Length: 510
Image 1 (cartoon, one colour):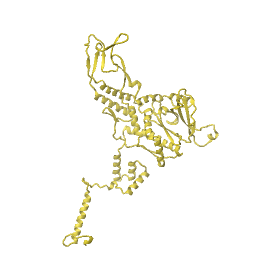
Image 2: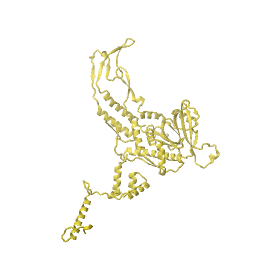
Image 3: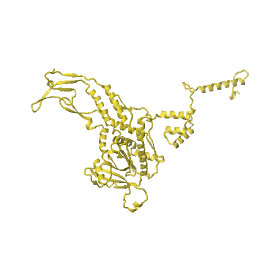
Image 4: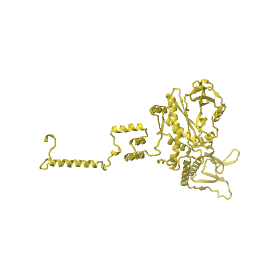
């Protein structure tokens, strides 16, 4: 499909990127799927014939991309859009955004590029498409920022496979129109919908339900490109990104090689038997030649050729399993891969026969934290642009103010944040307003409302907490006050009676 679309765009005089990066996307996809034909399939000679084997694999390429998606765009990420926020959340929910956007970041970090594309559906509501790298064809870009782009996908029309191509261009739909050419308004984006025969590459008529040309009336693109925030060292001039593990293929091979050897320690660690050819069971072939009956996929027996000097007896080979050596080797491979993929060293632990992700809080000076913050720049810009495009398609607004709150719990524990703010407020080094903003991750306006509610409810503040409570739950200071009051009452009673006996106070006894 990729070659057909690129050739169509070139025939239509569209400038597009070279196929240098595209030639690597298939390789990155193979590693993401965990099945590289010329690596995970190999051959072994067993003494009589060559057998094909499948290599055991850890599939760390997908694991790394999953972790990056969870670090950058998980369920705790919030898009703040003021009074439009509720409507925006309804639209995002209708487009299954929390699930599909996380998956898009994962596949974008695997294949190097992903895209969010917005348009108005048949019912008039905004629709968001999630496009992977092999369907993205930049047409123009400025300083690495894609300004015009084509997006391709497979469709079936009247039982025939076709390619649906959506081209986002900026300019005047009809440049020859004098009124359009003389207008002072800036160039706006328009969308061309094309259908192409998947086999011949010829352009087909668009279905009746699809407009071939749409004027968006928007001066910004209705798409956002997502890439890992690393330089494309395959094609320095390409606006396309590269896989987060593009420069870690050797480390991915190392992980699978050592793990394959580790697993084969147990497969081959059982006793093996060397069988002389003369003692092997034989069967007659059609040509009258007898051959040994031997399962080529059985790795327990190894056939030895006849030798006059041999003892002609079965020989047992007992192998010792080198588990600890392999586990150490796998851990070293994981550490190197983690570092090369931007996760820092020590991200993954090989324990209990599997790979586990470290759960400790990330230091703000660690490689992972710095790379996470760097990649969040691209994600933040894409989410802001997407929210503004959705608002325009929904009700035509062009001035939506959007902010993104990322999940910071991976950097600092929530309890630590609360304790620090309480201590700063008690020491007079921070206002309660700022403390609420940091703890609740809210705006100043929201924090003021929360602070007003606290005052109205009369809730106990950190400075009002009584630390004199005993282990049994009683209050020492309260006990002392009660004792003091009793003693004072006794003193008063002594003064009231000459005999020192208490007198009744109040009631009918006076």
